[in-house]
Image 1 (tube, rainbow, N blue to C red):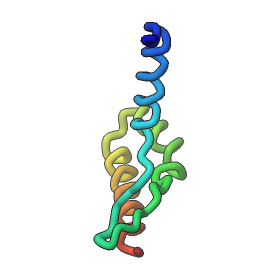
Image 2 (cartoon, rainbow, N blue to C red):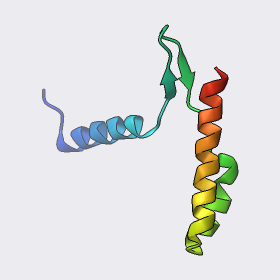
Image 3 (cartoon, rainbow, N blue to C red):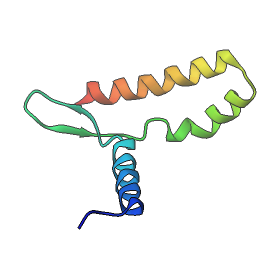
Length: 77
C-alpha cells in the first residue's frame, strides 16, 4: 500500500522542519557535540528594528556582536 499524496506531502514537510533547526554548533575531535546556543535571541528585537530602519552601520554592529558571542562560546569549551 503506497502513501497518498497528502501523506507524502506531510512527510516532506516533517523532514524539512527537522532540517531547519540547527541542533549542534560544533563537534570536537573527541566526538563531543556542543549544543546550539541561542546567540542572537537577546539582540533579535534590536536587530529587527534596525534592519527595518535600514541603518547599515548598526546592522553590521549587531551582526558582529552575534558572531562574537558564537566564537566566544566555542572558545570557552
